[in-house]
Length: 296
Image: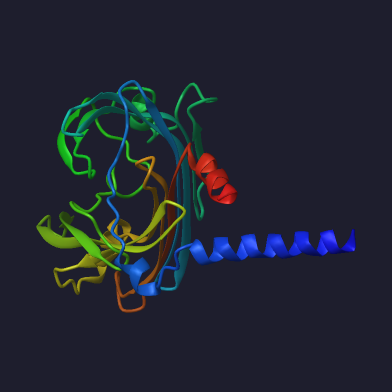
């Protein structure tokens, strides 16, 4: 019996060894050279929802007087996929299904609005309330997320930063590859003049694990800007963070941007502003993807 047991262990060891020998060993160079195609994949009739959270704290100090403003907005965004064309382009209707907003400023009463529980919005939130549950725009995007056409139905409510989609590269990419999208914004100077600022959103494929791509995102400011007051406006339009994209499912899992900036002299030599913000967008399929990763 002992001999049979020993033979069984030997056979098991040989079988395991044969599997290990047969399994291909990939070098670091081979992994780095692998290419990935990142495209959006939806089907007509599908409803894609995501939870959007935007948290901002702004601390200002002007002539010795300090003020702290905090805002929080949590909303549910949905895309109702209307059509997927033969070339892969996707047409969808964009909605904000619900919002929960809160604002606090030093020396003032807190302001709250929850579209699911409050029948009448507080002053200043009327436009937000009017947009909830209504079709905001009909949008057509390419398979890589470029907006090909957009027809706005009403004034847009944007609970956070960034565009509707994260643009993906036009062709296959390897780990470490970058792609970018040019952008331009308008900032209003004192006296009413408008200053155009050229930006570039830079994306870099950081890694791919279990079919999920992690992409670094950062805004590069191309137009020199020394005006500290305009910098306080610009900082609210910048992005820096990561995106997680399910390659097989063809959709974003998570987008998270974090900003922490200090600006001096925006309103006199002794003035300062500390801007801290977090924007996150998490798709409703994130838990499914997480479970898939755990099983693999």
